[in-house]
Length: 293
Image (cartoon, rainbow, N blue to C red; front, side, top):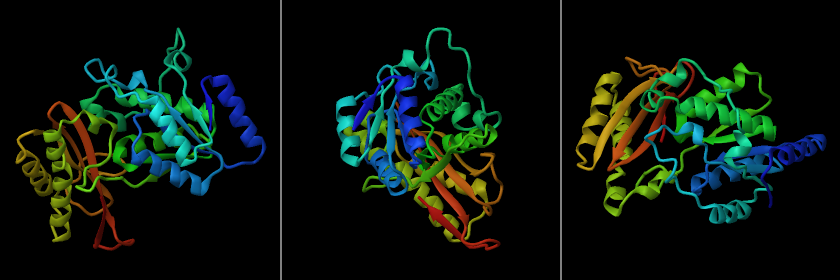
């Protein structure tokens, strides 16, 4: 696996792959890798060769009270994991390379960016959209792979890619979970043993929502209230939001029918975790629903 640290060489590398008519896959990460990231690489390898990954802890998507300084940085271990997974090239720029002195251009996806995560983390999605656009322009992949755990982020990236006519297709991959249902996240490392046990409440809340909807519930407020009750039953957990939203607009829905997400953001101790359940019709025009945890 080749490691590249400069934009100039990464762009040259990407141009060479394109000139050889190779189908390039890209997995952007912030490091602190887990099996969710390696699952993205494995999926990319099915579709593409070469597969390029990046590790960049993006300062522009962290708020002033967030955890940029303490975000886990495990470059040596991450490099080994990506090499073992079959990544061809690893792009590891430093912050000054991505944001040189005088940098003043940002990408904002209006509307979508102000809801849920955007409401709780002002400016977060501006930072995400800006760095993803830069990475896609530098790497020039045919396909870029993201996990569905960050559902709102993926929707915003898809909107940006379409609006700006980028030559990359976004591939959304399933959530990877621990045995007790907790979605894999780099931030899980912040949890104490007691908090880690408590964190399974997110999955329990979503599973309760799925059971209730499968039994015939269609009132979104009823299901949201159920999810909150499950979370509030855990003393170490507190709800930031628990909502049922449209998959395209991320606006609240009244009745569960069209594709929608049950979305959660929960503090377990001081660690903020997110998760979701995708709900969609089993077939076009069908009232039967299917679920993706």
